[in-house]
Image 1 (cartoon, rainbow, N blue to C red):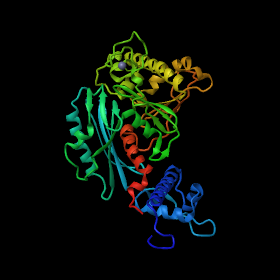
Image 2: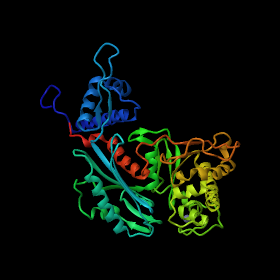
Image 3: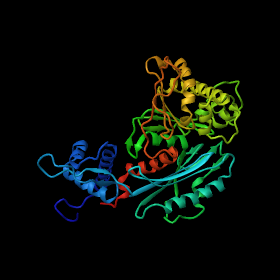
Length: 440
Ligand SMILES: [Zn+2]
């Protein structure tokens, strides 16, 4: 700049330039990340409507900042220079997702390409636990995972998924009934242990609801790349049952971010009392403890064991799962009638148990969803680790609810919520690439 022919730029002009550059950087990032194949600068120019030289300048900045990487030149099929395809970067910016669930803790660090660089999982019993102790221990797990990250990665911090109501903005957990936690600010308690070996990596910079974050992972095959499931009701079942409604790839959070408490929809007004103060809630039929109680099985029975018992004709397990599936169908029919989102994705326990739940859920959906004649509701399993295939038994030839497996969600077999939490932070970086760049 300086005293050239154009003269000195005004502050307003500079601000305008900066915001134009920010939105162009975002456009290029969005195009590269959403593409199914690596994409050349020439194709980016066509897709963005920007000139070749502008695209070259922007991609240079994005290569420097670690958002993009260049692949080897494509084979020359015509005259001119070979095109160098661009793809999401690997091993540069890294986000960590952590999930605290009533029965497990999961931590995973993911890079922009969706690759898991380090992770940690342990089964535990956190029902009625002490938040201070659990979050203090999480700090140790985070440091262990971060110590395993390769040199040179740039951490974006940690996002935490919790099974409860989280206040947006403050990151305060208002209530997590199954953990027995109330009014906790997790970021403070995790940080209480002091910084990890990589300053900032373990800092909790976002706290969200577990089902919302798991749905974020199901809606994308990798950060910034939409999956085939863009509109869905995502159900996550473990001790409780959470849900997230996704429209066009985005989670509908509700006025306060508290939407999706499907577990407390009333299935039967004269049903058993629930911890929430109501009665006959879905959780009292299809939550893990409710199913095991009804099946007459010990409370530490795992969902995999439960599925195995049901496979081998254990009458208690079969009946309890049939009852759970029926309750699920009744509750979901209400949700589908209300929202017109006919795809239901079963995650967590519900995914593992899907083949025993769907045959009972399906007749309820067919009977109760008004639009089922025209667009039959679809139940999909989110858990790629389960042994289900596309031809899940649905109760015979009269079946009208198609069942399908979700497309394999890359790197999601361990914890969808931890993956989604990491994707959330990576998505924030992809949304504002200019914030990771030096000023022009
Ligand atoms: Zn309830």
